[in-house]
Image 1 (cartoon, protein in one colour):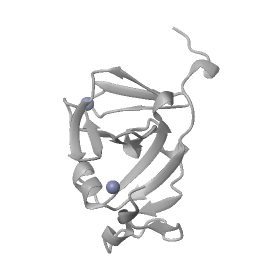
Image 2 (cartoon, rainbow, N blue to C red):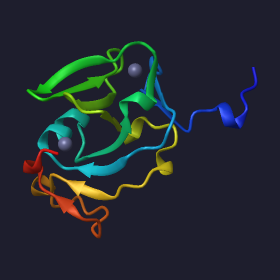
Image 3 (cartoon, rainbow, N blue to C red):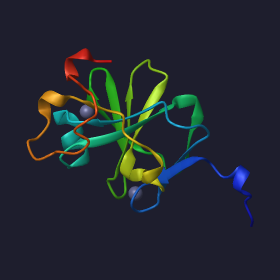
Image 4 (tube, rainbow, N blue to C red):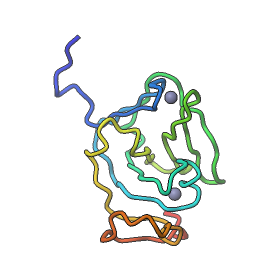
Length: 139
Ligand SMILES: [Zn+2]
Ligand SMILES: [Zn+2]
């Protein structure tokens, strides 16, 4: 089967084992690093980099992601088979964040700010020139 370039999704990704796939029909609204303790636990890493798409632009393929309510206002999802962190969504919001490492081409996006800067680890010295916001804004 041949797929022309124009039919290929602009942004697509999936988990480590390939059971869960996603694709977005339009580019991200926002890309940023998050240093909050919840993202740290969720990703098992020093910080998360999140890529926000409109929910209406995003579609899922393959296995349904496993859902975990991580706070009274947010649900996170991961692959139920391999555990890859996939998405973060706040209740009632029209956007959803995908973990940058799930993108097939993570270099296609560029983080524009830091979030949760009060939780930033001393050795995380990435993108120091970008603006920072504190977690309590709860945007
Ligand atoms: Zn998987
Ligand atoms: Zn976070």
